[in-house]
Length: 356
Image (cartoon, rainbow, N blue to C red):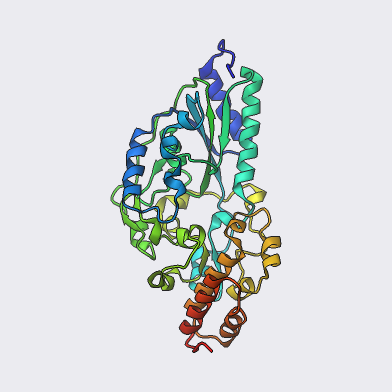
């Protein structure tokens, strides 16, 4: 819808940023729709097959890199950042304890999609009070959107060698969201990259998924293996997963810029159901109903109970030999899902117990 045009868009852009911060976004920037460089990078990444089974990465053609093809008449994109790092025990201590379950920090609280989308809708409503009806659409990891490339153009940070967005004052522990709009707002300038010669993220990756600076082979990434992959986890990668049952934060944990990150002030992102301190055996014992109840409103629910058990079985197989683990695995040997059964048998073998 055509908005009013007797508007000071420079002033409006400043207001948008101020309103965004009041809504809980730590940073707000504005980008144009020219994603040509990101398109070339994406097409090369897809050509190498680094997307694995994520067919949706190329399903929509160039709508991902050409915003006006996804949302007609889009001129500008308001990019927002919301910090999520919770106050918690040292993640390194969890990874060092094979009895405990490591869940990626972003998934410990409520699902960020709804939290951020609601705030973006409120931001759009505030803009509409000034402009009158205008064309817009809010996205939070919910459509073919190049969120990191857009955020980089909008000055929210730079894309690091691990392919995550980095900010000098906040590291990388944040979510991104976008408001596609037909308003001709002034754009922000990108910031300078500050990775320098650092290769900490590349060197620490348990599965060597960062195959080169700015190049991640998702097929080796633990986040992909435990969240996106529907079938069997490759045998050679299972021992490298350790006790990570949902995602992996290693490349963020070692990044020097994350020493500047601050804990979230959002109650929705604080850990729920003890997931930050849970043991593998406790979580492996969840029934499907337990899983659905305790992951209600959580990003974890999207993988379903079977993949949840698959992931935990791998972690149990990687743990030191323990009779309690072997008994728990045996109780899952008759699970109706063939993938779960196969991973349970693998775990039993790695617990040095012969299948019976």
